[in-house]
Length: 219
Image (cartoon, rainbow, N blue to C red):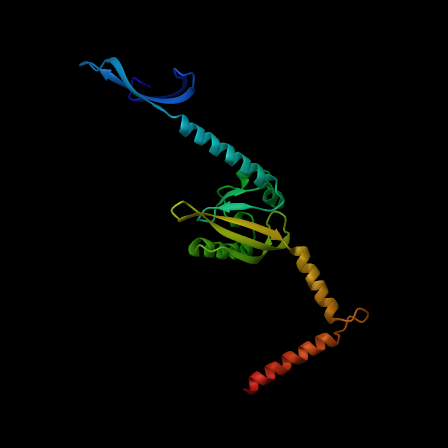
């Protein structure tokens, strides 16, 4: 309070021309020889533009949050230590974690098995150390569900205005069904549908591999 030192007051007030503005007033007490308050002096400044900029930023962040929460894609943010800063609803549903409090501040060890967590950390490290955007397949096993899926994961660094990296953004896309379909097509291409024995295509491929290896050994 004013009795213990300087006090800052933020308020709205009308100007003579009728405009409503925001002001910040910094008040400091004046004291007599006995240290009793005998007056005040203060400095006021118009903070309307700054308040408007802050309001616009909050509104922009709210719109972005709404978009991220409602897209089908999984999107998350991590700090440079690998701790989660944000995970949208798609991620939380996948991990069966009801709210952000169960995610923010934790690392991958909380959500994945040890092998998956190590794989994710290695990819993350490449992004934050080199500053490059990477696209990798990741096979992730979620601890809470026990499910293992294949993801096409895009990871990119987030930078400050001076270019320094302060966070990582990840956007994984589940391609488990696509990979299973590709494997099914490969099986159809190389095995007889009735006997399930290798067909000529597979035999020719294996023969070509054997010839190539023989040639290399001969060299």
